[in-house]
Image 1 (tube, rainbow, N blue to C red):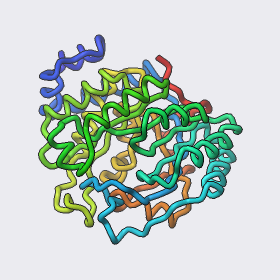
Image 2: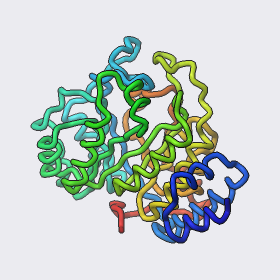
Image 3: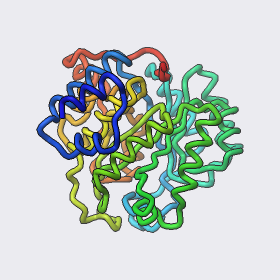
Length: 334
């Protein structure tokens, strides 16, 4: 097992079977996490990149079986921010010193290219990086959003198991999801993707394929989080025990893709006390504080009990583990 870890550290390559062995063997976890942390330090350094997260709509046309804001959930209190409200929040982020803003929403067709383009152009005047996370769009729409100022795009594949993907995403196409990611790469976006860990029917082989997919895509950012079942979804009775396995998937991803950005996801902190710090010591280098008002934070209810970042506490926590907050935009340096 340790020879596989050493191979990953030196060559940044593993076979699918080698990845499966690491995922299934818990006796080497400490060595795996230590190796991922060393590779993180060597290739992206000790600085933590902060992204100001603005969640601007929870109105969704999709019906993903794991998500609390799926269209069939009638218990969700829906909201949609106006362009001015989005701009005011982005101004708040700029004043706080953030160098990247993440505009995230459910798949809400109200925000067409004209509306989004105007928002992007106004935000871009502040000389900050902009990440979009708004789901599947057509190639021309992605192109126009890029021309309007978007730098990065997050679109998680969630699982590369096509049959599982189909079961979890009624009316959606795995092939279209993959095409969207390829389109984003071809258009020059810094492209982020990722997966959910702990899905019913998911195997370690499936997770190994996810990791190899990230590498084949040459993703610039990979977000990995454990499934946290929502009471108003079909997966409400699924056990929430994916923290350790999520951490391992993240660590192996860091070993195979040493220079990418990897967030310590909110789901990790939600499921495990100090999960964010544990992730930052196991390969992660990004934190995304939510700057919405508290009422809106609770309404973007993709899973229950979401943990949030206390900025002042975060600085103290980072200092204790020898990390500092970056002052730049945090683009991937290949």
